[in-house]
Amino acid sequence: MMDTIGTEPDSRAEAKPSAGGSFAKVYRVLQDAIDARAFPGCAFGAMAGGRMVLSDALGSFTYEPDAPAVEPETVFDVASVTKVVATTAIAMTLFERGELQLDMPVGELLPGFVIGRANSELARRVTLRNLLAHNSGLPGYVEFFRKELTASGLFRACLALPIEAAPGERFEYSDPGFILLGKALEILNRESLSAAARKEIFEPLGMKASCYRPARPRWERIPPTEIDETFRRRRIQGEVQDENAWVLDGVAGHAGVFSNVPDLLRFAGGILDSYHGSSGIFKRETIELFSQRQTPAGSSQALGWDTPSPSGSSAGRFFSSKSIGHLGYSGCSLWIDLEAQVAAVLLTNRTWPDRKSQAIKQVRPAFHDALRESL
Image (cartoon, rainbow, N blue to C red; front, side):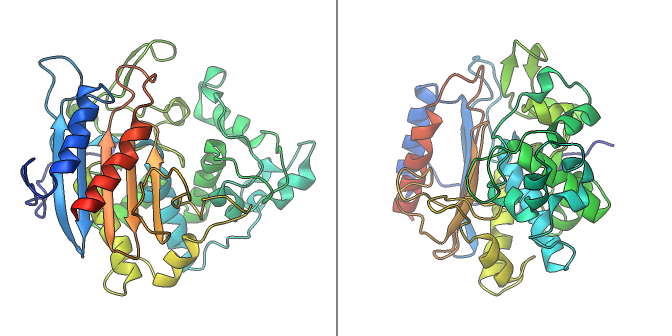
């Protein structure tokens, strides 16, 4: 069954200042990025002091003159932001219930990860903590979809990947690790990631627009991510861009969620409320645990969450060391400063019409710096 995208307007989205107001520098950064074809359009927003202070949009779905305009409520493919708003959030929920132990070996939930492999001793040492921390020793990215065109085949290939380093010794951001983590969470939860995210995260926080696998009638209201000329050979719009996630029927631990600015600010608000002791969906201690940096030394990675690196962070210069967030390959990002009680969301389709542009790497810190200076 496909999830649907909600159509109700956001009751808190009245904070829409003019481009000449206090956030003028933010608008200038983003408009300059659109003019430079870093992306055709974007939606963006911020929360400060427990309320939404900015929610707006610029540009269009594509570069065509008649392309629809991006709106503040426009839903985007958020790519790897899925790793925190769904996968990690579900893991945090299970941890609080005592149903997930961070040091549980992956092989206890996924026996195929150990059985039949040459380096089974290393595999037995890989834990759920290692998958969350991206220090499992698994490779970073594998084009499974080139050979595996079924969900079961792709997952079996992921189980059989070589472990290239001892668990905990090497940081390597690993999509395969989160594919395995997603499946492990489904086993613990006895339901799909899609159902768990909807029931445990999206519905409690009022994230009505967020889902995996948007219903087809809603596709035209979602900005396309690219013109795929090598795999699906069509315009990718309303379907998850990540090819491995697409082969996994659009529901995976590493990618697949579609969301918008108001929903992601609701999610950030839930995190901040929890952290500062008011109503929220987690305990403060859980957020503190999952936001602690993991081994090896020098890694910015916490449990599921990323943290600002000492130099060159996409969060810019002003997000504190007590910040957590994540990026998405499609051009999306979410950063939450737990200390300052500030959250920022930037949603773009920077991969349109292809994946060549890397300008988003300069836009993200400039956007966050402009936003924090405005606040």
